[in-house]
Image (cartoon, rainbow, N blue to C red; front, top):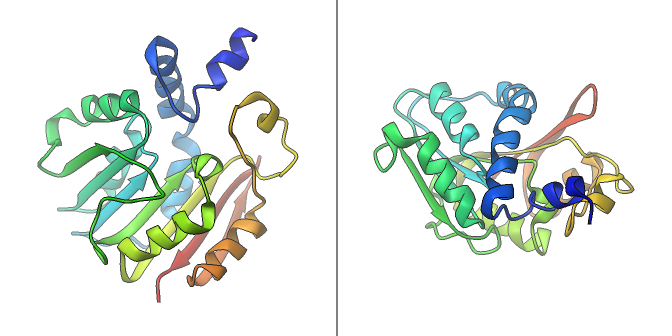
Length: 203
């Protein structure tokens, strides 16, 4: 396996030294997509928010900055990611930011807890996507928002050959998944080069 392929195979579940390098890379490289995508959400102060697949924790920081008095939760399947996200948010951990290990398929939160759930560059790796979206819907409050942000927007993307365990979806497919899961007001927003944000609201 080439070094590049080895590095990018860390996208789904960062581990060890190479995983830590990937988390640094992701915190930096996902910033433009995340900032643009979050601008599409009419965020209010005092929100309770969840970032699924929180990676290195940079999105948690960004969410906190956008909502005065917010509580932000992060969950990731990777131990390495959880450790990095805690480190990046050390000043507010267990006060305003709460991070734990877990899967999108079985979210360890009560029904109707969150005003906003975000998923940045992560739905490619969710097992049984329709089930995961039902889980997102369950933990959202009525009228709660869900924002999926992706850069890989073609099902035949070369990235699916480089990154192990990755499934790429078109924005249209993701919107359909949200519709099928019962979300309303679903919208696709696009920005060059290939950014897409797919939004939905829990009824």
